[in-house]
Length: 517
Image (cartoon, rainbow, N blue to C red; front, side, top):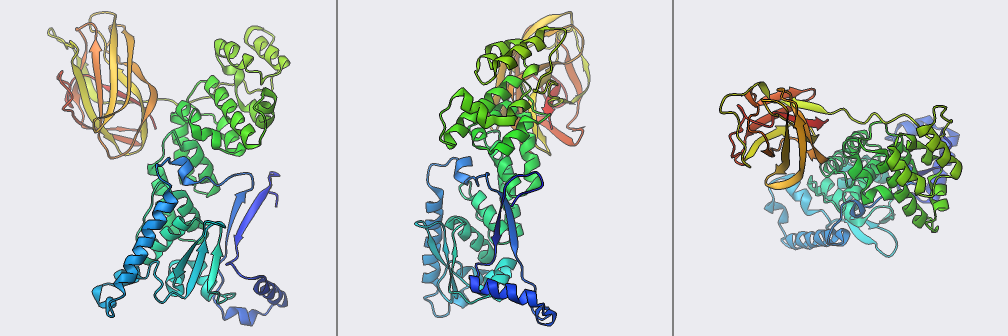
């Protein structure tokens, strides 16, 4: 099947595992067109998931590294629960042990008692045979309802499901039987696949929420690819937020090399990537090397250029700093001699040649500033540092990325300051940097940046700290606010026990938090 853009597509149509004879019978009856008979029967629910044939479904373990093989561990846990359930029903009046229908129904999870169907789940050689109860499954999923009670239902005692992992199928059954959501980093993607296939929307939503809370620069590119595969626009948007703000970390992550070609192109043409173009170029070469290995090609410069194809021209090479181009891209070997010469002319000649590469710089992201003081001042005794720590705690109601702090400078003329900035969560260091900045004697704030923006999750307090060294005659903030609204983000502030130099909510240092949202 080919889509509107000419890409090959692959349709996985879950036709309720029916044998060919029944499918043929259905096809013939539909041709005869007997409206009276069909109107008496409930509509059949089919689910069609469209997957791109060249896009590989990534396993959770590849995105969230674990120490143990999760599938085996999870299945063993469910098998133990199966033994516990079987032990429970040895009591002839086991129903009386539970006061609610939910508790009694939970006993049937992964239980052979009264099981009227079995599922052989997993790929050949790694299958698990799992018991089920048609009524319970039909109540929990419209696909199961159509499979067992629909127009084309057939009484099969054993149903083979090779495309779902056993641990994920059990997690879905646990939700259907017990109304419990049991997710882990090892199985969440496979569980999302199962929930989508059998139309269990609340479980699918829980899987997406789990992925969103686990989202970081290390796995954002892979999850972007998977979110498009599973058609989850909200997760896709969250992935883009992380990739834009922490572009250098995301592009240099191992997961970036595992994405498919279509996702690579969407990232390379992204206008808001917040990084240098040489980083984009190096990331593309790393991906090309991995792609050569996947296609069993030697990692030569010619093969790298070949697998990149037209994506090469999405890298905005003419916007690199001249040093980055001369010492990096020009010597990489992936550019032709004519391309290299033309780009050098682009940098130096007044009559610039036409290039196939995009020549407009990316817009990147515009930093926002949260200013927590209503005024600033200086007095005869001034603000003294002497190596002490100024600190404040803050929380936000939406995910943001702290890029740095805005700091005060000298109140008696120009001066240079040394600043060590830190960002912690519950004592764990998330980011730090040691740098110098120059103040011109005004009451303005001066930015000091972290090496990489730090991801800040909502509804959790973080500690911002700075140790300053420089002219003691400096400005300080007054009339501090406990809550500040910055665009769509609300910041809350409270005093920090780490502050040993007098900074608090009402006054002191760290007047601004610089962030991306």
